[in-house]
Image (cartoon, rainbow, N blue to C red):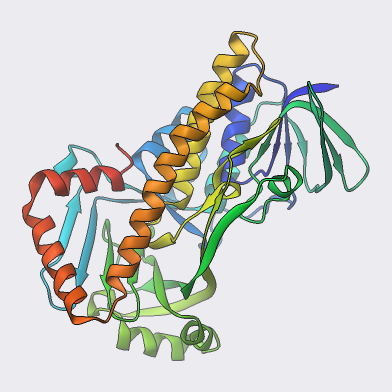
Length: 387
């Protein structure tokens, strides 16, 4: 049977598209390589956490996902604080933007599970399953799964991550590089309830960040050179705590280390967002330095834009893989994604430079931003996904 859309990748971005398109009446199949983990409501917090901005929250709410999440695992944050050394901090607050909050800290798995719970019964699910090959024809594309099943669809959406097989099968290249640093995620249990504030401290070795989680839980993020982070990963929880106490601000307070893991920092951008009857979203199209936690928010913005265009095409009974429609999608999202990627790169370079003139410039920049009302408001709106 010919499907309207096959989505490859059932993570947060792919699953959100499956919900949106199927609710609009499209025949949708969803392929996910890994079985969706099931966990009890009181399971320990996962290391993979995203700072969901207001636009992404509204997107998830429109899909019914927010109502399906366990409220006890969501942590609102009202303030984003940036500081370096003993300089006065720069605070962005929800009140300045007339918003309830800047966003929510949510585990990736919590979001993914909520979206899967909202998939209509009409969505055909192949999980766990992997794609072996892709063939494209004038009026459809055909996917062959590793178990031999064949799926035909008018459109294939690649939401299968940074190492996207579908992007490779479609012959779409990419440019990018690996940064000099790696990033360690550390879950801690604190001696106090978390405050609704996330902060980043900039140091000559890389940023240190604090992400509040519900109750007495929090997540620390430690950016540093690859060798340094690899060395930290081999420490016992007690030894890692001692390092954190030495290299993080005293604001962290007393805590115990629960778990930790690290990953290298990379940037990549697809040369095109579509080819034939294949279109890319999320990490399949772009990966970004996670400095400001914008990765999944960019992916959700892709999904929102693409779903809006596809639903319009479907309602008008037009081709779901119309090149002109794809071009509109790519033009809008490439500009937004490139702008954020380049901004994060500039931020990364400025705040990791040991040169005295650069240190003076960034100190001046923080001071200027704290006093420039319109500029500060604009940055805050970008952080909250409101522009």
